[in-house]
Image 1 (cartoon, rainbow, N blue to C red):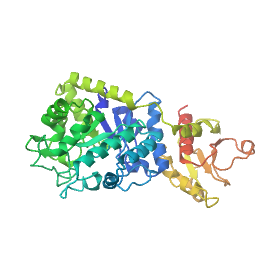
Image 2 (image 1 turned 90 degrees about the vertical axis):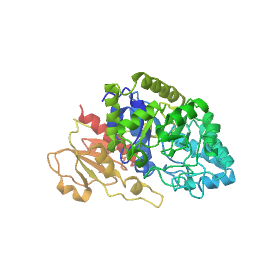
Image 3 (image 1 turned 135 degrees about the vertical axis):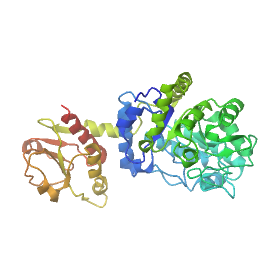
Image 4 (image 1 turned 120 degrees about the horizontal axis):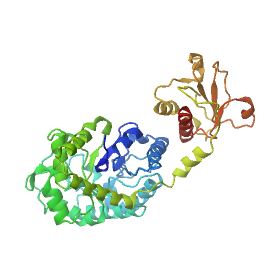
Length: 451
């Protein structure tokens, strides 16, 4: 795939992050979802996968939907009482600053928040407790405070969902809402007008407002170009809500939605589950080839994306030093390439109440199968099942067992005595049982296997 215009897309993975697909698409950004960061170990691994591409020259926005309260996705962030509570107690700035600090430390550079929608008694749960208030002044102030808190740590905020989802009584994830009593002077819209100069990203609403346009707002020239750009003076990036949501997908073909979005002055198409929606990108490039999309227009949008990347995207992030150390300290003696290894892993056991080994190794098998998807992985008591001809990688906690195989490479996770080098012809010592250390051990075997 020619990915010259890949940075007109923002993509997410509902399961594991595929670095090969990211290289193929080369999107502007990536959104991490709960499955990518089930706990802090998975978050660290996800960031390492992404930033390993930075090492190759790629640059991505990295986002989440961690709004606080009803939507909290990033692990090890203290739970917030939610946006309604923050709005009532004037706590949005403090939360934005706290959240921005953690996100920045862990590798994020953008957040799909704040929600600038206004809550009504009839609002769908798509707004619900995600809104700061039913009072427009509180919503505006809390949103601005939240933006300022994020910005102190270099995190780009995203106002959503323009021109306002609060009056929609149904959820645009599942149906196409229509809001009849709504025009460009509605107080909900004016919140976005007053905040437009404070952000570089605004996300659209998949809602129809018939008094302004018969088209859904995401694809509306009147809403995006005439009102948001020309009337409100917004010069940043307009990003769609997810293109595979039913409000859009059930009523517009991919080609129609793509064409209308860019011609309406949208900049970034969000695909929240890219692996199962590659036809959106396929349709886009087909339209580029046939001339249905204006290449000059797309080039201008691409340049604008790159310009805003320069403000937020850095080559690394503060907490990556932990991964760097994990990689650098590995000591290894491997005699020849490791092709198609079989893995033996221990049953995790803690040494004390404060020990974390059991938690650390809970997902070791899953990690191995992510990096070596065709391999066989056995626990120590299953070692009799291995094939004698395959190289065996044996992860050892404290005491290794006799393995009846022609070639065994020992990985000592918690046994670091000096006699190892004399007693084992092939070994790896990561000096750690953390998943990030095991990840780098696996990368070592992959590199060795490529020799």
